Length: 219
Image 1 (cartoon, one colour):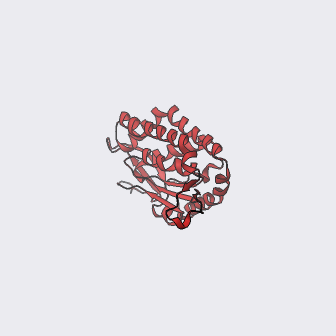
Image 2: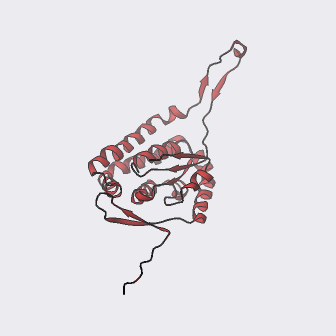
């Protein structure tokens, strides 16, 4: 008589769609864990935003360097999680993420600096208007499965550079890539990293429901 098979409903099975092989398992956060991560991100955001831009750039530069130094390993992780070839993962996700991060680093000051606004009426000739950029606060990012690194990295990096903290939710099918992103952030040494990019494996609606802004890319 065979033993009945049991399943942990909090556990996600990660399967390579090209081969059908199981590549790993990932635990889902509880609602309480997700709320705690959001509270930590919200509490940490003012201190992160108060850092000089050059200091935030220093941390983000480490993320770019990590992408370059670990390009092969990250490409392999994407290949196993998504089923695309390593060359495709490298060309369309890892390299574009590294180049995109470098672009945001080089242009962050220009993007974030105050900008003068021209008056459109003679009534305002003696007035001066300027736009000042301020962080939203906590950004919730929900990423798709087909570009699990390339899409969220182009959301995470500018959000952090602008002084926001980030709650990131990767797709259930690509949890191993989510772990790679988490390792990347932790290795960069951001202050209190759990409050900067946290957490993968949370229920889909929670970032959008609790964050100050939600970025969602679906497939």
